[in-house]
Image 1: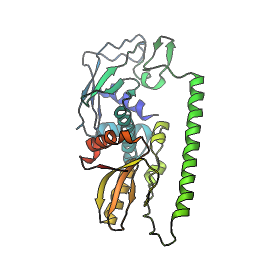
Image 2: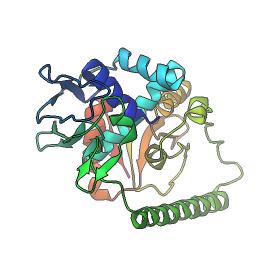
Image 3: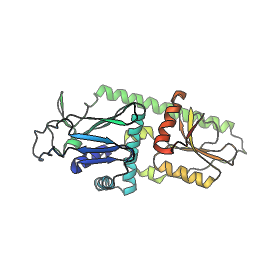
Image 4: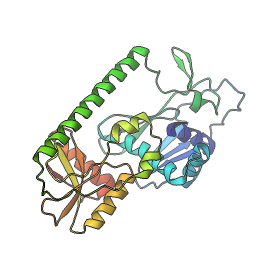
Length: 296
């Protein structure tokens, strides 16, 4: 079962959903949840409210519910939730809505906070709604915010995904060949990245895989458009420990050194250079407390 569905089920069971770094969803006390056998249910407008609060911490009861439903250990359940929310924040930061089927969608406004737009539901069972997401008619959809894509759209997405994967493989092969040609035999041995066993055994959604590229340690110009450097230190062991910790939290992190004395940790990007300020400000706001800076 997808993490999104578990969030919606927990919300209707507890009438509240806390998402760390985002805010709190609340179900109106005036709305009475229907009996399981009641099929004629209409969700009134403004039955679900959202309070933006970036200081919201991880909800232990939500993690417990995910553990119970998925049978995963607690750290993996927490990692799944964190990965889903990071993906949502990335959508919001590039101006796209973050949709949660069964609740509605969040959009980032000009002030930097999130606005919530509730879905319109009708003819649903409370328990089945977040899971089945069945269409009743062309214009009447059960607990699904938007209709599912047609087979033609699916084929187009598959083709586009295949092209992107081929391009990524080609770019990786080109980079490795060029690196091998231009690396002297006496060059300093690159820092080895600790194996992320948690990432190997975590079942990710397709969206999460698309945005979670493997982190690789680099010591030279590696073809990224720019990097957001967030830590500099002469302590190699401390740098490696920090990198491993962020990798386990699904960040893409590289470590490199230009003089074998000072080590830098950074998040790499292949986006246009016009995005450097926006990406830096976003990472400083949510993770690095204004310490990060851009390096080309």
